[in-house]
Length: 393
Image (cartoon, rainbow, N blue to C red):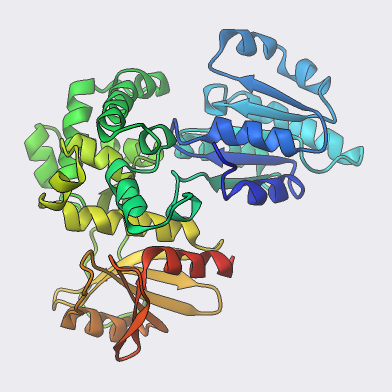
């Protein structure tokens, strides 16, 4: 696989921080990226996979073992499986800092963001930088034509799914990915939730793609409590498989919707949960519009500069913006998302852009050209708007 576009950022962070954490769901490419970073690292490296009993055994006396690796970049894969390591890492980092070694000591890979952040935040505050590795993005593909974009939309961005030899092979991989998560990976993290129940929940979220969260309806369908639904959703969000897009929280005299929108983050997983196996089936499916919306949102959030925030805007009076981006320089972008190659703008978008004081107004659509739509609005292909965001970083 070619070097990921985010590799230079991770190399820079390793030159600035003692520890760097790469977050992302399983199979997104964290281990491959780590080996690529090790190949480019100017010094010696050591890779440890904490799912292997042999590597866990090396860390029975973690302080002694890691102390002997001073001067090497140590990669700890699936580090959330040994949370007791974080206190040891803190002591070693502080000891080495006093000896003049300040950066490039530990590269941590984790597939459960909430767990990893909670475990490491107290021990490694001020010593670690966190970044998420997203599934493959449009700008990382060799071909960026509409056919390549549609393949990414259908199959999603997990490398094995996207690069499979056929749609059938891609669907087979995604089906196994879902089953493995439900039957092996999630139980390893501790939650005692029947795989069949969690599959139903995940599939229900797929049917509700891009809709406002209605926890009570989900609870009734699964015959569980609203608190249980929140717990399930927390788990899927923690695993970086589901996104809760929060409503805009700025000052407004309008009556704002307060419930988040929920998306299955990878469209390939979304389509597998819904039994969508081809582009023709996707285009004919009622979820097509919200699936496209979810892909665009994931791409734009992945491209946002550090410190930016994403939300959506909706009022009870009908004003609505699919994505609001709060960006450096007091920029506030209002983004409408349309799959059509000839997009039209609703009155609700105009009202919403006025309500929030948007500095820029964009429509991401299914075509390949950028052109004005009037009233300060520009239609733009996804890749071009993503590039504009990446250049801000």
